[in-house]
Length: 289
Image 1 (cartoon, rainbow, N blue to C red):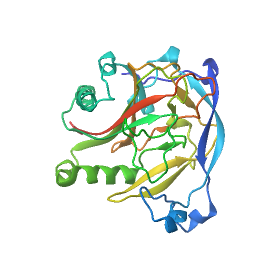
Image 2: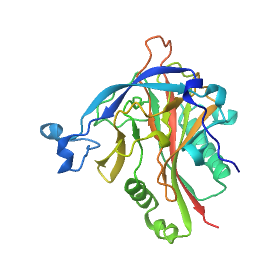
Image 3: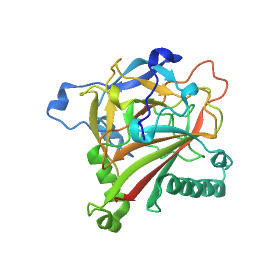
């Protein structure tokens, strides 16, 4: 099958969004970049991170007229129309459980494997601003949007996440005969008027655009990549994204070191409704032929 291509950006409508990008500090020559997740004693709060960030404007190009152009295998993300996944009331406990079961069934269909673990979900609201130490991500206490340009995993971080989540089952899938991926299924619960999910074409990233950052928490040390500002990067979104229009993207793939970079640009003052969304993360394990 011929690989899909994204249309040239000069042919696409766009808006200029503002996002947060990591600074490349001299201290990183001698220190691992890090940020602590979770609660710290007040007297240690100043030690939470050694990273610094800056705001930067980015043109974000609209793929509404090219809905089927991006593909997960080629670009690391794709858009999907799945009306059946927009019918759940994630505001109720039973509705949320039903939605997560439906997501699992969809992913099993999409990747043609039953070896899938849904391990995490987050509800986000563009008006929320929880503090770093707060637990959030539920319907009752949503997380804020993600204004930092980032990927959810690195080669090392994805491997550690899978090993941590699978526990004793990890050995079964680590014999060289399995492809392991971490994917996110993102869906807005109402039409998106502000803070759309924007994704970067990995082929537009410079060789030193990413900085890996350790994220030690209470029971797990993860690793993500943050992005430095570079106007050569090509960012895309889907205008007026509807609840039945989902975005599927990859943050780790044992057979491909290309990672998708995401950001949710700052809210628009013209929006009449804040954005509410749910993202579900899953480990996908596929037996190699």
